[in-house]
Length: 156
Image (cartoon, rainbow, N blue to C red; front, side, top):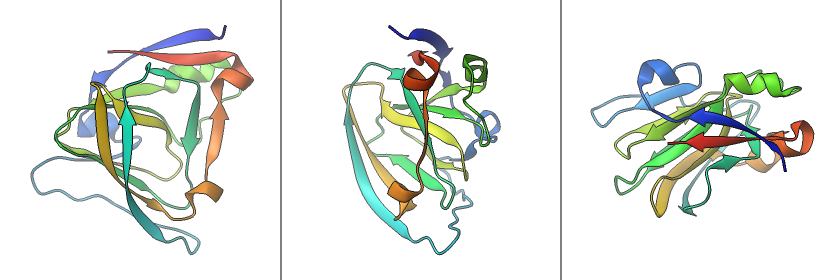
């Protein structure tokens, strides 16, 4: 069994989320959505059912930001770490944060922001997802369980 690193989820705020990207509130707001190196946008809907809030890996994209918009005012959980974090030892997990999206705001993940989720806090969540079309070839993965024998367990 991997070692568990516990992270307590916190309500999201623009100030706390700033190292990872932009928070877009219900009132008129804007984000810096951008692509690099000839990337194009793709827009789709992601659907997730409830699952244990245990993160065994994180993903990072370097050619496009990624906007996630919870639909139907359903809350979701998002685990993030700053761009450039080298997951070469369990000590790096001290940089991992968990945020609860209450369903009234969207996030735009900055270039290279490590992320897992968002996954539902309740039974289900649908998310509008705007990201680079080539995300499958622009997906750096930090394999926490495999390489560090550690997982992140999120406590709500």
